[in-house]
View 1 (cartoon, rainbow, N blue to C red):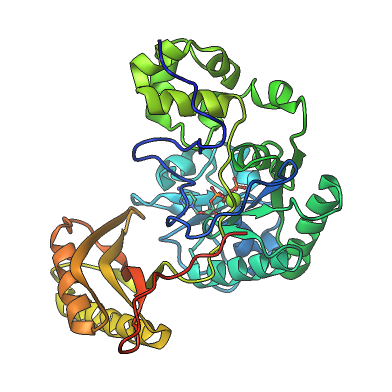
View 2 (cartoon, rainbow, N blue to C red):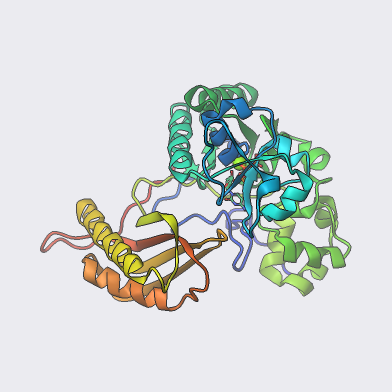
Length: 409
Ligand code: DCP
Ligand code: MG
């Protein structure tokens, strides 16, 4: 019989193995003591983010099916590119809800999407604009609570436990703050933990506000497919299906032994925890960077061989700028990594941990070069990035090294 008697206090549900989408970025140095009352956590996710930012620039497209695709050229004289005219192997990064109604979605090939929605308008990606609006919406929310965990360009977790207003009022205030600051719409889920809030924010998109309170687990969460749980990916979903487990309710009712037999003890424990809505992970805010990086998206996709000279120059400049950033922040790092985005939007990262931390451009360049050698460069490149992590302060002489502090709320 599997031993599932781990105490509530020491468990922190996380999908074991590689799939750890919500794993805090670094081991925290200070952890908040046990909360005196039930926690209230929000998950906020922007609706059709890239497409919605695109519509801010081209408001006449509101209400129309619009997709964002890397290869589209900017509209000229009010003339927009249409999906039906697209030829190539590009993929859609996101689509407006009007386009989704026609069956189009993120990661779908543009040619396939063109068969479903030939009249849909294609806008080019504009990462600068996405980053700008990402910063704006996060700053707007920070006025309501500074206790924010940044989960990427369009999503955050917030700890609302210490605020007195009721959840509905807080959810509305968050959505209003985002809309006032950006003109964009988001969806919010509020529940006692990150796991349920993440599911909840997706339940009523777009412009959703979903609160999961007592009794809602069985009513609203259990009927959902198990794949709605962040961390249960396509492979695990298929494996669960072969065991007759389709919904989260099925998972909650599954025999621990059966799950352990097929997934191992750790994952089985995690699956049962999530099915019962249990998740003690804190909202982790960072007061210091864990990584410093520099990256650049090229004006045109570059070929590893034909554009070798240009790529080498950009690579060196990135390392030099990164070295200056480290010096400015007074830190150095032992892990050097690279990030590549190919023309099909696939991202590849590699890193290398050195014996001693580095700051100088040459050492970063050398280590990053070794990382680069481990990537098969068989497609054109859209983006190149270099990062340094495992940061520590560059101590003044005679001063002992201290680890970079991370703050938790
Ligand atoms: N994105 C991407 N490639 C994907 C998925 C997403 O480039 N395969 C980008 C485009 C999205 C953004 O990330 O706008 C945020 O991803 P989400 O999954 O939150 O999707 P959206 O915000 O577009 O839609 P939703 O309303 O479902 O959140
Ligand atoms: Mg989103």
